Length: 181
Length: 292
Image (cartoon, rainbow over all chains, first blue to last red; front, side):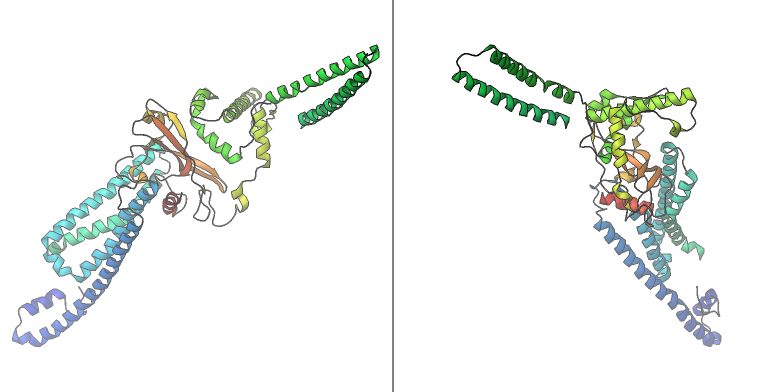
């Protein structure tokens, strides 16, 4: 955490918790530095959060305009649109959104056990989905297309899974925040 | 042309004969008794008339003997029909065999089947000649097309054929597999009904199809499509050849597992199971399927 570049954050907190008259002047100075140091990430976090929200709303709007949520619609175009939405656009937007939440409301997230447990479960599920999808596609390549460029297909799928893996990693990090402290 | 010309001549001769006959009748009114010379002329005229009336018959016979023609077909329609014949052509040893009965039951026109037979026979003969003469280069072969009248006609059509899409083959925004500005194909391929089969699923699988990946037909991405089938293939378009399996034939069957339809040649939507020809191919395929 940024602390003005002078005093380690933990030490500042210790100083603030047990304010002694002898160190009052020093702690006041530290308090000032702490407030300035925490403000910046929070402001940046709120901006990132806003961008993430706008991106999420944007991709959701795109999905609605392409009738991706109308599950009675079938066909290759709609199917591929859904894959792009759930594997690429939405995870990318959610990565920005969660990054913003982590920067702006880190303390609240750290204290909320339900959010952390949920994040861990979703993180593992996303990892499973990404791994399962990649494995299935590589298997299909071997089974139906004679393994033509199987390694390329694997790399291509992993590259395509990046937003999902990144989101999974971010949620996993979020779920471990309390323990890190 | 020759037939019409002949008919015109015959009509003129008939009119002349009729007028001659009329004159003769008038003369006979004037002259109640016909002399031997006139009688001879009259019988000669009747004989000539009968000959003339019998003459057009050979013209009709020759028209009937002309056989089927590719009139009304274009290179594109013939190519599309040939794609429908794909699974009716099999190999028996080294030689190709066309399942004529199967093709007929699929509703393919007789003229196309006859043309396909010509092609199959010609190719089999090529193979025989290559084997017998140990020819290395197929271009060295000189097998006349005279024995294959429909193939000769198709060859003549091909000589004059200029594909409409080849006006700018080297434009920078073209690609053999297609681009947004120059999609391949730039139309919705026809989806003909192939026929009724006792087990449509097994039939499609025996033709090289597999059940399409779930995401490529708009269903659960982890469950293969039930009624939708894919057979990977390459595609020769106006900008070159796009290698297999970037294109596909899409087979579909009804829920009763009897009726089969096949759509020949479209970008393969199983985009995660093969390497892409260029970096944004996946988005292009989605766009193509949304558009056509």
